[in-house]
Amino acid sequence: MFEINQFVLKHCVTSKPKRPGIKIKENVRNKPNAISVKYNIKTSKGTIPVWKKTFVAILGIGKNRLERIVSRYHQTGGLPAENRGGDQISHKTAAKRQAIKNFIEGFNCWDTHYALVGHSFLPPYRVFGQIERKIKKCATIINPEMYVKIIKEYATVLRMGEDYPIFDWKMYVKIIKEYATVLRMGEDYPIFDWKSEVKKVLKSPGS
Image 1 (cartoon, rainbow, N blue to C red):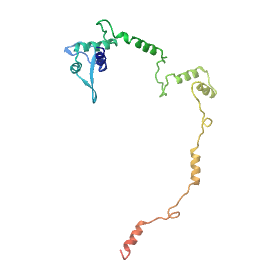
Image 2 (cartoon, rainbow, N blue to C red):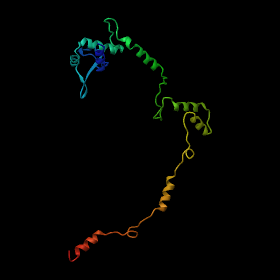
Image 3 (cartoon, rainbow, N blue to C red):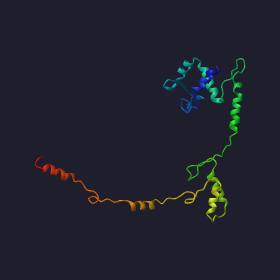
Image 4 (cartoon, rainbow, N blue to C red):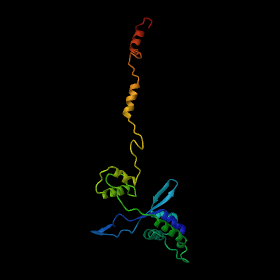
């Protein structure tokens, strides 16, 4: 029984109905269904959706039992209790459920925040906000080194030319130009005039 319940939940997707009830009279509608269920089956080509009637026929169970399993899981997140001879199922996973809850409660949650204007990336520890808050506490900052000192408390600061070299590409281009060889057409290498050679061949007596 437990295996069938697991199979049903694995191949069904529940959601809240988006459409209202069917209109039967003016300004009067039928009460919409409590949940909307999509039934799926696995084939050699992948998972495909099927009608409820087809799904019930494949499993060989009653539609009422199918509705009870799906609605109970949608409302409470659990399976129907096995009452025949006592509940033989829920106590088997009680320790596992409690261990998962204890593990989740051990996480340190960060405060909810939204991206600030000008920052495309905002890390969860709010490093930009902490730096800005500390700078605002200073009445007046005259020496630019104060900014560097504050930022160093939260990040690594690298100075151009000191912590890593700076290359002047324009200077290296000038050096390359000085040593580059300039070749002139007709002076440094001959130009082959193929048109004149063709004319000579055509005008020769033996042609």
